[in-house]
Image (cartoon, rainbow, N blue to C red; front, side, top):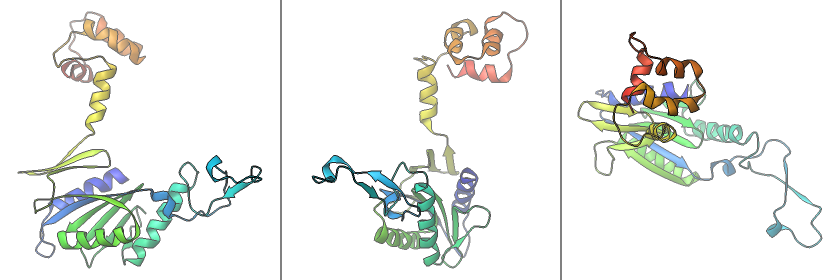
Length: 231
C-alpha cells in the first residue's frame, strides 16, 4: 500500500489547482525514531557492561521506551506517530493507516517506518517541518523548483526528480548495480546466449539456462531478449 500511496501523492504534487497553487514534496527522516515510542509490554534486557555497577551483575533492565530489535518497536512508533498527527489535526486514512490528510492546509503525508513524506504548498510544508523538528531530530529534503529546493531526491529507495515534462519516479539504481555485479557484467555490450550461460548457471533456473544455451531458430521469449540487451 505504501508504494501505491507514494505514486498517488507524487501525482498530487504534480497537479496544480487554483486553491493550492504549486506544490512541493518533502522527505523527512527521523533519527533514532523508535526511542520516541513508549514500550507497551513488559520487556527486559540484559544490562550492558558499562552500565552495570558492582553487585548488579545478576540484574536486568526494564525498557521504558521501545528499542531497536524488539518485536513491537515499529508498531509502537506508528502509534506514537498516529497520536502526534491527530494532535496536529490531521485525519488518518481509513484505507491505509500510514497516510494522513489535512484538508484545511492542503497537506498529504505518508509515514513509512521512520520516514515522513509530505506533499503540499511550500509554506505549509515548512510549518509541518518545524512542528516535527520540535519533537524529533530530522534530516529533511524538499523537491521543488523554488529556492532551496532540490530537483532530485530519494524517497523510500526510489529516485524522484523534476523534469520539464513533470515528475519522474525511477526504481532504485542499486538493484541494477547488484544485478550487474552478480552476473559479472563489466561493460554494457550485447552478449550471446552462450556467453551468458556461465552467469545464468548461478541463478539456479535450469529451464531458463537450457533455453538460452540450446540452439533454436525460434525467437527468444521477450523476457530473455531483455536479459540479453541489458548486458
